[in-house]
Length: 278
Image 1 (tube, one colour):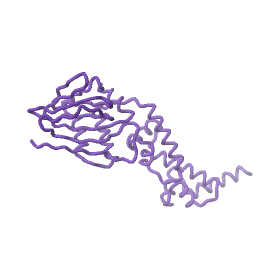
Image 2: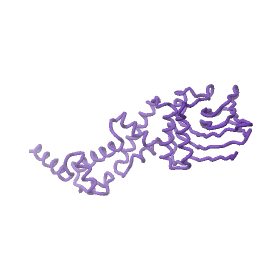
Image 3: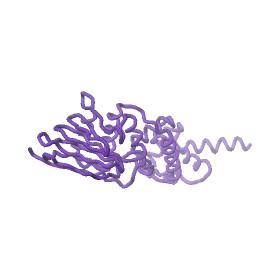
Image 4: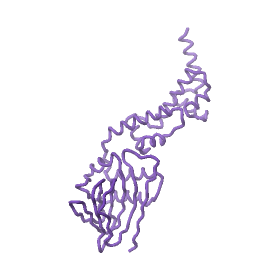
């Protein structure tokens, strides 16, 4: 039997707060290969793809086979060992974050019940394999694959994170308003908050009834309109003041929101003010 081990790490410049992967990998174990007893600082899920082995906690011993998964919780003393005649091949993912416990709870995984059996289609195993087989990747792509794994694990159930969601929206709005004069992207906002871009988009669609991209554009155009109405700065300077360095793109975006180009809009405002002043 060819034994091997591959481990990959999630490289990121920021630490998300909801749920995030730390490392992931795979191992075809030798006979009687064991790990522990030891304690981990994060959550760790091992999925058995072939062979057999045992997983021990302080109170129980579990015999596992293909299609089963075992959970190691933070600060839990555990030990696991490959079978002496049919050693297992497993893949694992280590993760943490404030959503971790609620996600695991939704599928009845905890220290007391650490074993989970996959469905007949092995959907969870396939989703985890999709992560491992990709090796090291950019964090954004890893998070997409990781969320797909979580979706398969929970069978698409909606996890209750309302309080976190509202906090993320508030942080996003504050960041966008503070940086309205800069060229910012949805990815910039997501990184600042510490969540995945696709998750941020989902939150905005649910709570604000618009995408974060449209929210950014709308705020920039409304801010530009205030400049045009209340100052004498040129259209080019106005565009730059809200992070647009291509005047043509700014004019096109402004017209899409207000129906007319910025120069026409300003002239209309001047005319309306002159009528009111008479």
